[in-house]
Length: 234
Image (cartoon, rainbow, N blue to C red; front, side, top):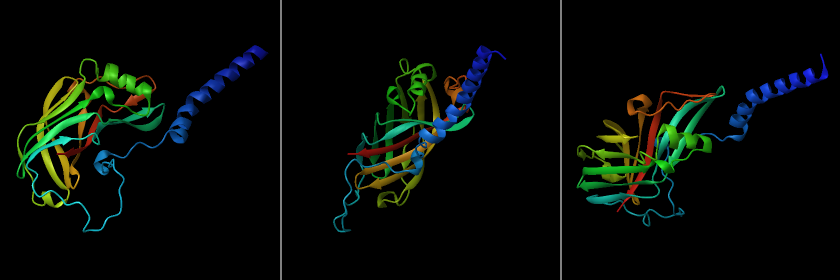
């Protein structure tokens, strides 16, 4: 074997090792774990928590009537399972650019609207974000995702005690210009600071005219999870 041929062969072997080992090293050594699902976590408060006595602890509202606005502590985004060059990865993109409101009449939720600025959703990979904002979600054409409650909801017993309660919210969800009536299971909790609402909904991409996120070397499932953790205050 001539020297140039040996050098070329070594270069091919090194490139093949880098192709296989590079993603493994990045995913398992340098890349951190994906954030926990929002339904399994609480929204982090912006203020420093200090130790208080029971007597000093803020009281829960006794009447939730009126309008509660979504605050900047709220989070919305997606979770999608990927296979990145043979390695399983959970891709997560999130944003705090969420607006909206909840309107109550006593213990009846009479109206609710939420809107997410899709251009502000970001993951841990700028290349994924460019694909998401471009061919996948086309945020230039469809800049927002929205949910509008379709029917009033009566809060279950215990909702005003600070105990998390589960409810189903039926309404119109709009993603990438496609609107469908969906039912989303929610967990709602009344706190001294406001109302926390957490939930998730499985989105089958083809049903919403969302482009297949897969690329050469990266394959994804045909569906993902829309997730949110909202705080509303008045």
